[in-house]
Length: 129
Image (cartoon, rainbow, N blue to C red; front, side):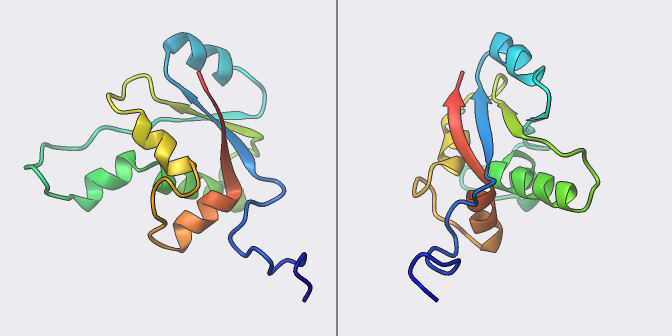
């Protein structure tokens, strides 16, 4: 295969990568969420309190953007959700929206598995409002 073939960058962004916008205000969320072909993703708060440095898999997956986007992509692939052309992340209720951004910026947070590489190829950050 040539250097420009499909194996040149196996985890590079797909041509049909879906743009993602982070909405930090209610006005931005309302404006962006009304566009045709848009799906709004809302990371959820933890289920319960944890001690300092304690990790809870159930709680982490509720707020982990990569988990949420991977699940959304899988549902789209299986026909369980309508096709979409863009994603808006509802960050209006989050104290730390920077963690959402870090999940989408290449190299900002390490990929922990194939799921994270699939998300990096399938979605890309375009804007924050």
